[in-house]
Image (tube, rainbow, N blue to C red; front, side):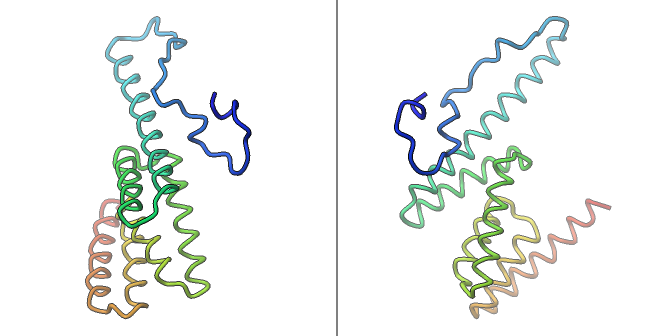
Length: 166
């Protein structure tokens, strides 16, 4: 309700519309549902609500971040959420935004900001593609030894990912 009580100016943000506490779902008709199924369903619903709030916490921390420790707190929140539910829409949106920003930075020759985006993506979702992009940025700024190690790790991880998908 505070979002509607104030004079809204500027960007509308999701955290204005999310309750701090997870609301009860008293409206759910539980009749005829076995207790173990109901417990599992409620636990999953609660877990997804927790994930969404952790992502928003990361978004708020990022908006307030003035330094590297602040940025790291935001990335850590997003990583916790992704660990719990890597398919959460807010997690995927954050990864997409970071990816688009990184590509844009690279298009205009700003490698360090692009590398920061990829580093954050690696913290959230340490897959071969994100690690490879981070390694390629390291290579572009001349950190060849470190880039080679990171790119080898990306290759190893890619082989593991491909083996899992086969």
